[in-house]
Each structure stands twice: as structure tokens, then as C-alpha cells.
Length: 396
Image (cartoon, rainbow, N blue to C red; front, top):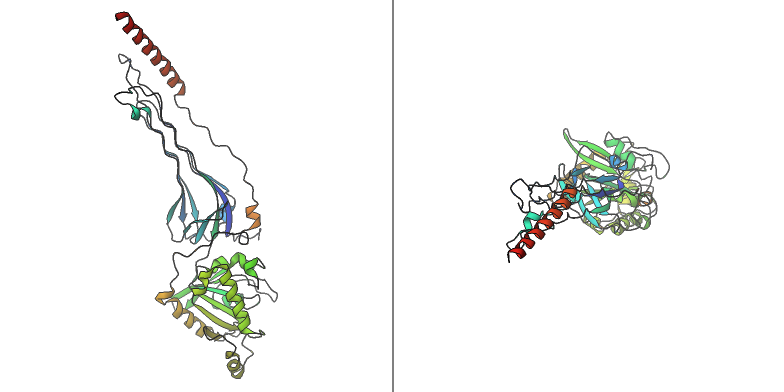
């Protein structure tokens, strides 16, 4: 998987900008020895945004951009000059990306629409200058607000493919063969288990100009919800599907048992998958006659619609597409924009990403804008106050 271009799980570090400090400057001009406070406010720090982009299909571009830092706001200046705001940073992600906190595994947000913008981290507010603190009893405030600190968070981006139909089955059930037969996708096909090591998408044409999207994930084995095999890592890609198509080969020993195992693994992974519409396709039926098919119907669960197909012989594919199209276009089976995302646990994490160590990088130092002039002004003002006090004593 390290050499694959399909990256659906990545861990990055984000840091918003911290706010600039307010200025504590005092106005000093000719013939105006005591102009009063005129320090400006500091600029706000930059935000971190997430933006959906339909032209992206994987998180490959973020695998080599592990740090996303917004810039800090500048400090305020004299004459009530405000500091410059920090520059925002926008992370473009493919539609269907979910975001989790890398430390706790808690779900934060998701991006499902093209152009959708989500504020991930908020930049710190700039501090107020000393001009805001001048009152009738405190005309020379010698303090200003510092800017709010930056927010640093390590996040996990998890891509969940958006498709209409998701293929679910054991290894060598004929999922890749079906996808290659009814779409232009070219998944790897071989006569050994776990041929598919990454999800594949295919656009299935239906009666002219109509079409729907089908997703093929690696095969699921019993115990996948406990971390066995590859199915657990890729089960996330069928969470957003409108229809789940279960595929069981005709030479299976017990169709009901295999169907129950698949349903149990999906329920253990995410209980919301139980409520999704589903179909059952009995594959590799090109060697069966009508009598055998009728006998096999007795071994099929009654609560699911079943169709007999053969991808090699092009048998039953038209009937399958008709049934899938009716379910997809049912108003009750539309792809939900929001689903219940489970928090990441140890079984769903990708070890090589969790073990990734970020190189330490110190926060940039604040720009001490006019700090030397602040000190000089404070000393001058202290001297003026002392001389004014001594003159009052002599007059008395």
C-alpha cells in the first residue's frame, strides 16, 4: 500500500496563526508633549480551512505536505495603526472526507460537497492597543492586550468514497469481474484471494445517457470488524453508498451463513449500515440450469431481493442494473449528506500513519514592533511626570 497512489488515510499537523499584540505607544509630536495613548490593535491570526474539491480523488497531495501553518497577525503600531491580519491556509480535500482528532480519535467534521468550506482551526484574535483603556481616571494606560495564542492540532483525514452502489462479499466472489463487465473500470482480476488491495470506482451506463457509480472494495472475511484481513480498513468506503450489493458465488457451501456473516461484520463496523437498502447477487451462475436455481432460492434469505448473474457470460446483468436503478432512484434511498461517523478506535487506525513523527518546529517569535520606542516613550513620560510633580511642590 505504500507504493499505491490511492491514499485514503493521512495524518497532518495544523496550526492557526496567533494574534498580534496591541501597541502601548504614546503620541509624541512637536508642541504636543503629552499627546496621550495612541497604540493600535494587533491583527488576527490566520485561520485553517477545509474546502471540498470534486477534481480530487485521493489524499495523495497531502501525504507529502504534513504541516499546514497559518501566519501570525502583526502587532499594532503608533497613531492607532492596526496590525496586518495573518494569512489563512486552505486545505483542499476530495468530497467525502471525514476529519478526526489524532490524539483522541474524536470525529470533528466532514466535507461532502464541492466548494464546501469548513473552518477547522480559528486564528487568535489580535490584542487591543492602549488607546482602548484610556479613561477619565486613567489617562495614561501603560499596558495593552497580548494576542490570543495559536491553536495547534494533529488531525487525521479519512476519505470515504461517494458512490451509489457498494459491492460487499468474500474474496473471489466476483466483485471485480462484475465491475469490469458493466463499466469501463479495469480492476485487477486473478484466481487467488485478496486480488483487490484498494477500492475501485466504475461508472455504469444504464439505458442510454443515464449512469450510476459503483464501488468495489477488498474482500471481507469473518472477523474483519476485529482487525482481520483488509476489509476493515476499507469498509469506510461503503458508508456513503445508497445501496449495498452482497455478492456470494453459486458454489458456496451455505449461502445463508455467508450472508449472515457479511451482515454481522457490517453491523459491528457501523450499526447504521444495517438500515441501508441491500440486494443479493448469486455470482458464477453460468453453469447452473433453471432447476438448480429454483432449488437454490430456498437457501436465500427472504428479506432480501436476489438475482442470479454471471459476469463472464453476461447473464442477468440487465436485470441487475434495472433492480439497482429502481432502488437508487427511490426517494427514501438517496445518498445521505450526513451520516453517523464513529470515533476512531485502535482497530480502525492505520499503524504507519499513527507512527509518523512530526519534526519539531518552534513557533515564530513575535514582531516587537517599535518596542525600543515604547521603552523610550515610557522613560520620557516618567520624567515628565516627575518634573510636573516637583514643580507643583515648589509652587505650594
